[in-house]
Length: 430
Image 1 (cartoon, rainbow, N blue to C red):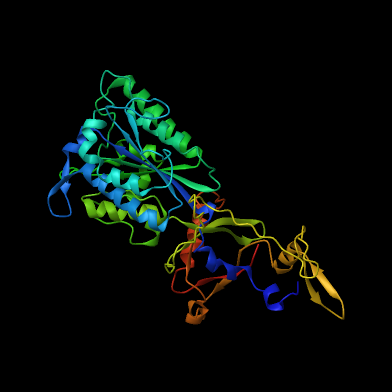
Image 2: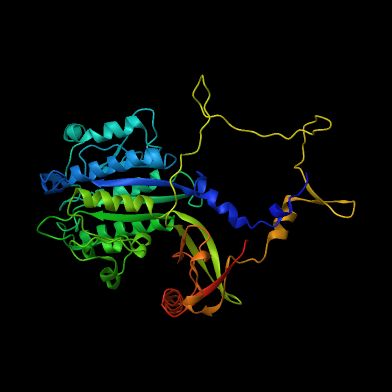
């Protein structure tokens, strides 16, 4: 197989454009919607789309149904589960009280959303009290802890798949900022401790817990009472991530990449914030940033703007409607025999064909082991418009693998955006 010199030394970065349009296993998301179904969710109201008062439970169900309708078109490979807690009836594999996993026939509890699932969930509010029921699962004089049970059930649902091939998240909807407020003494301390430990165990397994609180018109949701500890936000950092009442957080890029806690006064705001949670945390790739010899950090890259293209074609059997598996075989043009070994490429040189394997070609194109290397600082005037060869990619330090002090990170990334200096980077393929 003859070599094309332009193809041999073409940078692998040129193939990145196609990565944004392919459904890959590593970009799959497993999401569990954990919905508080206590009587308080049905009695508290706030303005809806038509300016009529709607219950918090109705707002949550409407927002999730709308997000599922969007997801089944844009991200059909993601898998979801819907779980209610503080319910009268129970339905879960752990047989825990006060937790009901909602599903339809011929579908696993954690699976891709189907048209039937979305349709029935959108209409389930009418029969909720009759079929599932609502009750307070955490009351004084009882050792039952429905929030603990809900986290345990959600963690069990997310055991499917590996944390390396899928992002696992729990989206918690509630309007109760102090779930153990009616309990006093040692019982309250014990329930709080065990619930926080259950949340920490889930996070240690790679499951992120995100809170979507609903505030009453006359009272703001106080996250510091309990949920700040549950989702792992320190008390001093609440002022940084919690905007003031009525302020819409998320317009800046940092607000889209970090866990943002907010007040949700109505249906439209909840839809907007839920949409941001579902579609703004796609990591394009992870790269290394080499600052000096022996000093590097891991970066996550995020695609800011990409054109919308039709989804990938799925081949189905015309009779059974099952997925078809595609296989490719190479046949020798001279003998017609089926080739058992992978083909090798060659380049004519001085009347001789120099053969290359795929691995050797990859090593030839490898410039260095790092993706980004800091060379120094240059004036911002050196940056020209024609240097932008493709849509911009936002680069942010990974919150999992960061070995630099915060002050060093702050200096580096603040200088990169100031008006007088610009970090000069060189890119290469690893």
